[in-house]
Image (tube, rainbow, N blue to C red):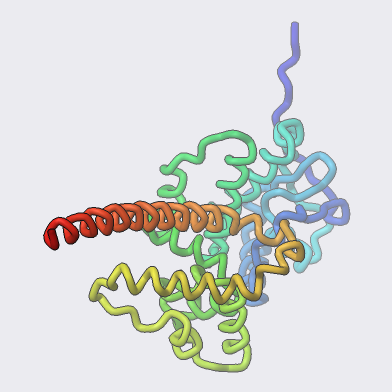
Length: 292
């Protein structure tokens, strides 16, 4: 008769044997005041829920409860040892850690967006579809719409100073998204302005402008694109070999989309140019016939 594998077991472990999971660094620790409140509750009512750990003592759920226990001077703490996750591998462990923080922690929108992006990456890297309802479940958990969550996701491509300004409410989320669409050098210029103490709204206004609700003429848009391409081509043209691939992987999709757009524009212009050339020939012979 086969013995059923044990998924987990609960036991007390010395605090000295426990260590945080390295991927937990994406989450900020509780403030001293909040940690004191948690410690007071644990001191008064005991430990209501065990922390989750791997067999080697790596904590994958309950990092703040562990901090509170250390603050209280506890020698041991009740743990749920997750043999099932240890056997499932690193991806399953990281997914558990991310979801545990989503369910138990008071996260700011940027931290939620980081978790959302990382869950999408894990699904993509392991050949799994990332279902839209996961986005909606995360959004509902934090009282946001799925569309708003995607806007916070875009904000992750901006400097930390811009993210902090949006969290503080001194810069609109929609304006933060416009900053995300700017080239990296301009994003860094904005970050420098914010670091120097400039008001966020003023710091970004020069770069994103006050967009009019009136539709922009397509010729104007194309002129802007050509101007920007010319300007950056002069600077970047001879320095392509200096590009560090790793730091631009996340922008590869945008660059490919830009390449596709420019190819479509070129094809359209060439088609129109050929039509104009043919019309010139027709007009030429028509004019000759009129003269005769």
